[in-house]
Image (cartoon, rainbow, N blue to C red; front, side, top):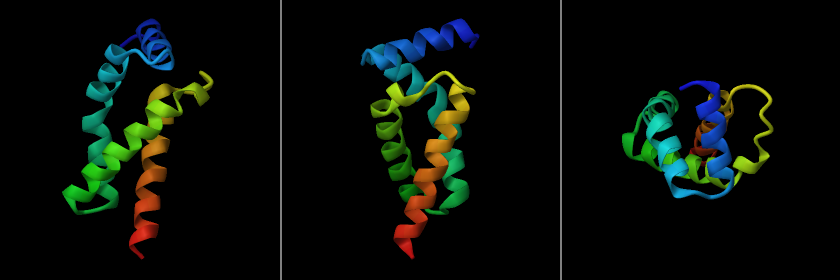
Length: 90
């Protein structure tokens, strides 16, 4: 995906357009699920983290300021969500 397509996708998500949200989910969910699985070994818990993480990504996308990569920002949300889950389990 080139940066112009990514900018269009981000703008669509910020406007709340369903096609953009779906595309973000389809593009990033496989990678983010594997990231979550590295933190928690239980696939059901990882899927819960995936869902919670995408809720945060899509509700907080207006906070993304186009500084750095969009994929990196999403990754950081999922790392934080995974760490939060680990804290809750302890």
